[in-house]
Amino acid sequence: MIESHRLAAIAGLALTLGACAGPAIPRPSTPPAAVAPPPTVVRPVQNNALIGNGADAIGRMFGKPRLDVTEGAGRKLQFAGTACVLDIYFYAARAGADPVATHVDARTPDGRNAEVNSCAQALQQR
Image: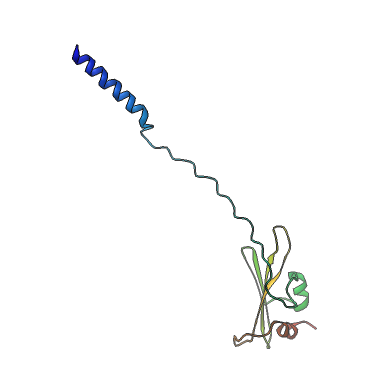
């Protein structure tokens, strides 16, 4: 009789501990939904005659670009002549807004820095 009490106690203990263990096979948890980062607000840091103009206005000033490259949210138009090369970068100031020129680089054909407004004047269509 003592043997059956011992067996019942061990069985009861095993059931109690088994209930605390949880599922034997781990279930994959659902990863949290990815939250899109807030849109980047681009603010111009340069001050020249081209900043703030849209691509259409720039096209009317210089004609057809030598390069027109879109990457992500940005766009680059490149204009070139014998005097200089002008790279104009366009970004939208906020979601839904039209992209405008926010940065301009100018260089001579051999790669030295050039002054943006002088280069723009040399390249403008007449």
